[in-house]
Image (tube, rainbow, N blue to C red; front, side, top):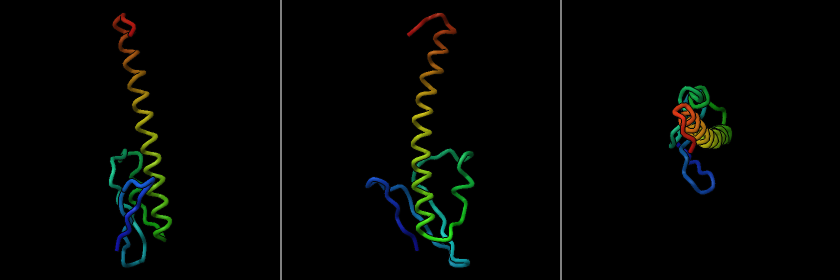
Amino acid sequence: MADKIYVDGKYIGVVEVHSWPKTWKMKPNFHYNSKKYTGKVRKLYESVYKAGKALASLYDDTSNDVVDEEMADEYYMRELFKAFGSNP
């Protein structure tokens, strides 16, 4: 048995039940930093509600990471231009 999880109308993954003991595990349908979030993704939850909330939280955290990476890329490019003596 699996429940689809949506955030703001966007499908982000499923939460599946394990038969014994009755625990729930998330299966994200988006890219995430596996080194940073492996523990959260592999964790077994005691209810579909808690697993769904954790999946939505992971989605929110991941979307914030993408924004941070884009800002970091811009910063690194500016530093690169400074190193070569030009200023964009």
